[in-house]
Image 1: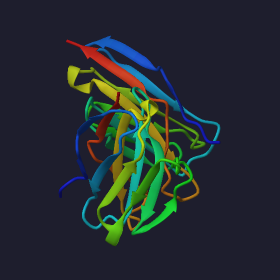
Image 2: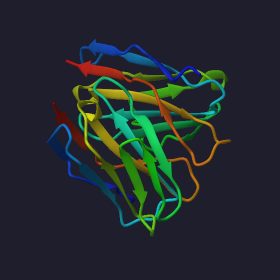
Image 3: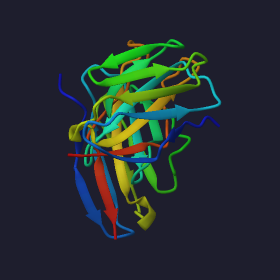
Image 4: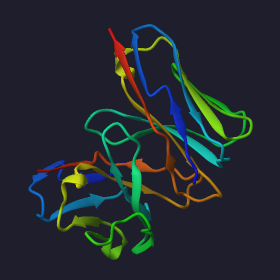
Length: 115
Length: 111
């Protein structure tokens, strides 16, 4: 089966500019996650969707970050405006609540560099 | 706050050596997963353990879940350069799907 697809793979922008990331989860996976990963560290959850509903967005900096998952499939994560500290890898993952224990499958990530 | 501490943080070894990576917490987890992440890629799931004391083997990799489900270890026998990467443990608790990631162990295996 096809894995989690993310685009773009790399993005370089100047601070204060907007940026958007796209994710297509594994077919049939109703749960989708966005993580941020700083160099050499483990991923940190930003937001979790069950179908089209955001069920955990407690770690999402809502002043500049937004996300949506229309129709419960693809998702986009947006930053506006970007700050230097937003430079990181943004990972998307998906899982199926029908399959326990819950196992998440990750995409390749988008490496964001803010200059 | 649940924390998963991994040790060592960095490990550089020669091909053929054995190594063990530890993942420790003061909290109980319902499942513990191990991932390997290569540069420029997302984490790839290696194994999931759910039962205290459980041991799983994946070729040269042996994973163990502690009896109390608070810790885990990953042992690699006869390491190869292809084992190089960032190893992450991650736990779930209370039958939720929220993953708590460990601090990571960066392994480098030299030919």
